[in-house]
Length: 80
Image 1 (tube, rainbow, N blue to C red):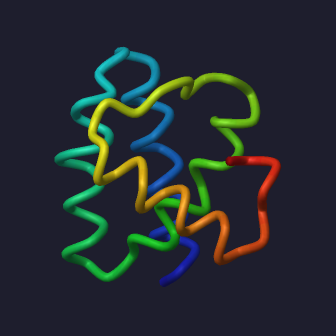
Image 2 (cartoon, rainbow, N blue to C red):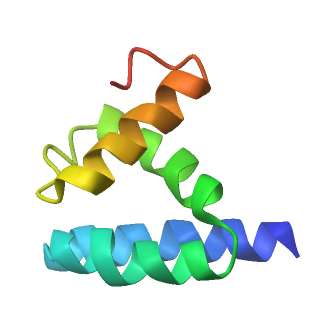
C-alpha cells in the first residue's frame, strides 16, 4: 500500500510541476496528503524536485516553514 501512496505523490508532484500550478501543489495536493496521513511522504518526495530546481519557491509561508522543519528533522540541511 505504501508504494501506491509513494507513486501517487510522485505523479501528483510531476503533474503539477508540468502544468506550473504550485498553488495547487502546496494547497490542495498538500492538504489531500495531510488528511490521508501521508504528509511526511509528500514532503520527502519534494526533495528530488527541489534539488533539481524544479521547485524554486513556495508562496505560502506556513507551508514553507513546515517543509523546512521537515528537512531539518530529517537532517537534510542541503535541501533547505
